[in-house]
Image (cartoon, rainbow, N blue to C red; front, side, top):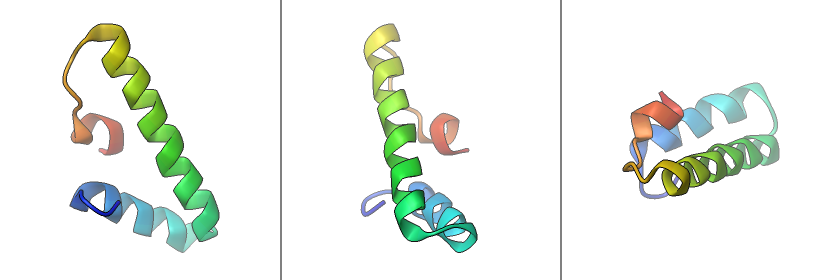
Length: 52
């Protein structure tokens, strides 16, 4: 969230609907799934695909 504007926007939208702790956990879960996919397939990380 600190370094990417698109992830920060997604977090802010999610935290407006739920509690901020839930939004942080949702971002962490999305990033963990993206890391697994990157390791499994060897493709580059795409922010638009994960948070689009």
